[in-house]
Structure formats: C-alpha cells, structure tokens
Picture 1 (cartoon, rainbow, N blue to C red):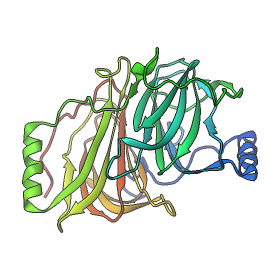
Picture 2 (cartoon, rainbow, N blue to C red):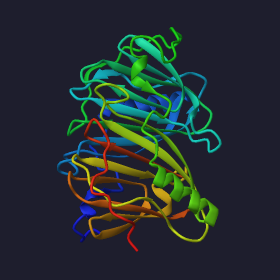
Picture 3 (cartoon, rainbow, N blue to C red):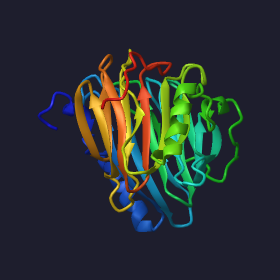
Picture 4 (cartoon, rainbow, N blue to C red):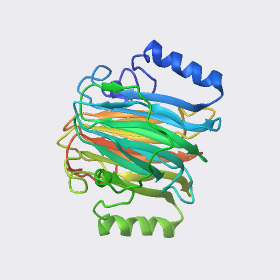
Length: 325
C-alpha cells in the first residue's frame, strides 16, 4: 500500500507533535491522585502530515477513575471553525452518550447526556471540556477548517465544576446537534437496502446525524454512523464511487478497548481505480476532485464507527458511479 499512488493519504498511526511537557506532567499528577480519565488518543491529520489536509483528530474515553469530574481541555479559541463530536457507544441506543460531559461556550455551560455534534464558530471561546460521568465508553472527534490545530488564548483557570447546569438552551444551544436533520436517503437507496434485508445479506447500522450550513448556519459538513454487524456471507457496499468539489476526511474507527487501532473488521475503499483494504483504524484524506469509493464492508467482528468531514458548507456527492463488480 505504501508504494501505491494514494496510500500516502491513509493514516493509521499518531504522527502529531507530542503534548507539551506541562500537559504531560499534569496528566501524571492526575493519575497519581487516582482521579483521572482512562483514555486513548488515537491519531490526527493536518497539513503538516498530509499536504492539503485540514485538521481532524480523535480519542477514546474509556472510564473516569475517582469520584470527581476531570477536565479534558481548558478554555481556548481558534482562528478557524471547529466541530466536536461526542458519541455514545450503546448498540441499543447510540444517541445516549453513556455519561455526562460539561461543555462551555464562552461563559455558558452545557451538560451533555446525548451523543452530540457541537459547532464552534471561529474566534468563539469554548471549553473547558469536563467529564462528569462515564458509564460506557465515549468517542470524541474534532474537525477544524484550518490546516493546523492550534489552541489560542488558553485559560487554565478552572470553572466551578459545581456551577450552573444548562442543557441545550441558552445563547449557544443552537450550535449543538443531537438529532438527524440531514436530507432523507433517496428512495432508490431505501429500496435497495430493503431488498438486501430481504435477501439476508445486509448491514446492521445506525445513521447517527450530520451538521452543515443548512442545519447550523456557518457550519461545514460533518456526519457519522455506526456499523454494527454484517449479516450474510457477502460484502455489502455502503457508498458508490463519487467526487466532491472540496477536500474530505473519512474515518473508520475500531472499538476494542484493549486494541482500538485494530479496526475489528475489513473495509474495501477505492481511490480512483486503486483499491485499499482497511483493517486498522484509519483516517483517509481525499483531495478535492479525486474519485473515491465505493466503500465495501467485507467483515465486521466488532462494531466500527465511521465519520466524515468535508471542508465545505454542504455535503454533495458528484459524478456518482455504480458499484464495481
């Protein structure tokens, strides 16, 4: 794959710069105190890693150790727009966050108990991000329109963690999405999925939600879904070949706590006429105009989380092609 034309666009390891020494020291102190987050920073992508890419990164938060909330990120700003996803992992109810997270927009706190996409406009102070409770693992991903991820105007002063409790209202509640407001699936796709189900060869999955300018004004596109199980003995295509008039990043994420870099399955992904078999958690950068997909699910041993982000205000598939034989 490394010798291929497009293999350079696939990231499976963490190539980001290491955290500053003071952050590492703070983490050590939290662990020493017995009150900390058990988590796995997976990887990220940005222009310094793959030329032309915007920033996308992700983490697993497995468990909250101790009996006090823990801050995961201090208040800061960015010189670009950002979207944060906080996603629950319950197969029977993935819209339940499986915990409680406190997130601040400026000086307005929000308590999140549902899987959420949070839009943060350029320059708006946000965070701290505080984990109050984790009942089941929570997946976090971040996408930002800038070529590099920089926290500006960082404030290390802790908020009063016993302070006011708002939900999704207030001045900034409009930036939080917890339901699916994206356009419905085309009737032809609905019929195709129904025929697959009748045949016994189909994918059990949950289309979670997406965000774009038509849903939250000013936002770029980000969406996500869960792939739970592959029924039958044949691969299933989820997305036909197409192009975009913007850059895109697609993520396929494994869910094994003891080895989250293992995808727990096998996905076939095409760049133009070049197939790639994905068996590790991966971030895939797709430059503007490059034909990509189909996405074909070949095997699912453990649930796979997929999200995608596009550096544009709306998600449009152009030049759609039929499934490759």
